[in-house]
View 1 (cartoon, rainbow, N blue to C red):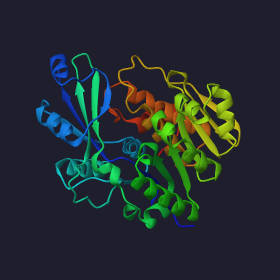
View 2: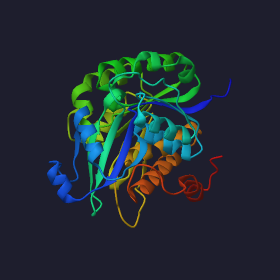
View 3: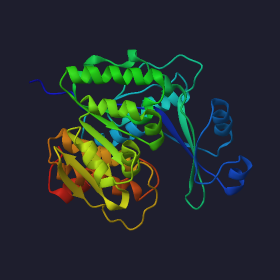
Length: 335
């Protein structure tokens, strides 16, 4: 059997994180609730962007963050997402490729700009996020190249992108290509609002055997099963797919494979600074382990270590060498 070119290919929102320092007066003037996350339109995004202090810009989005984590662990990755032919689209392309992640989706020559999350950081570290999804929500089936999907170990889907109809069709196409090629399909449920809007779709994917690995946090799992008994919900969902992974924040995580349950504790750190990206990097560690055919226990440990590194500082990208951290902690080589 030929060796796969990629460990993980992911489909998700292509968003640029734009960070800038601010103060409470600016937030008040702009009617922005400190520490909140809100969706904004194109005009509001452009106006706010022009009025922000000097910015730091980096490629973002849930699935893209996960791939950066996988790449940091030595994984081979490809990303499928949509940007526009504009300055922030160039930032996304340059940054994601600088992480050694394959990205060749043609830019959109359209009036809709590249998605961005405008993050205002207060002196006390609070992050107020203002998100314009932009052209990311127009990802078309034509962006799905069968040869990329067929040459990956795992196809990873971002639940956020299931919301709009056009990218949902693209993701369905990718699933069919992956299933036909005998590849694994992983889905992260992303957020309870995604489940509230598309619960029956997600259940159908699971019931029809189209998902091999499902990622959810406690709230998302409860929303999916529509009751609050977490253990019963885990059993119900795990019975319908090969591998379920449920993260529980400070209480660690659970994986159930073929109804065999494995747990990991959250890693202790001096201080939780920012939980942004914790789930994304947990998925990165776990998927990197699975792509290397490591045990469920080892994959959970990798996810827990990657998540702990992320919440120890601001931002959703590793600042320390998580590959060395994991190799040392688990006494393994990820080369």
